[in-house]
Length: 120
Length: 108
Image (cartoon, rainbow over all chains, first blue to last red; front, side, top):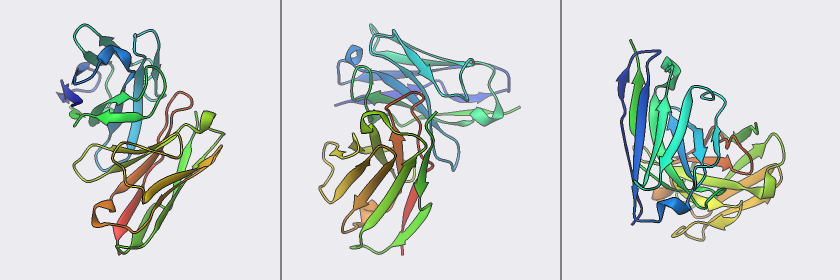
């Protein structure tokens, strides 16, 4: 069965960096686009970033563009989110999600999330 | 960026009733690439509908999606106790792939 397990969350000071990882199993990882979606405490879902199946294209939400970088290692079945210049408003539960397709599709599987808290 | 506006924000219904949730886009969504997700407290979202009207795996047929271009609807017939949750629409026809703000379906 499809499993997505996020890790790397924690408490970090404003302006610092953090790297999230998402380990995938139960499917052919290199055949699907992958996403990060976040949810601030008590708030709705916010789409963060997308990387195509082969890593050739990446897209970002406006609030993280220029600060966050998504990447993947298909040999390790893992997708990453490098977060720089973190702000208090980046505090959220970060979900990793698998696309339905290599490039464009809905988010068919989700992990349980890893919590990032930006605070001094 | 396509902005999705969901209405109502909260709807109070009884089990057995029908829920009708709306999602309006600020511009036409390419190929009607709209998905609907259900989220219960403490859980990750679950995909219900993709491509505006296609049910995801294991989703019962009392849940349906419709619409095109800028206006989309999620309908849930004969509400069951497990249907009381928050529902989000998302467009994936263009990047950034935005979500609506959510509609909460609560027990009346």
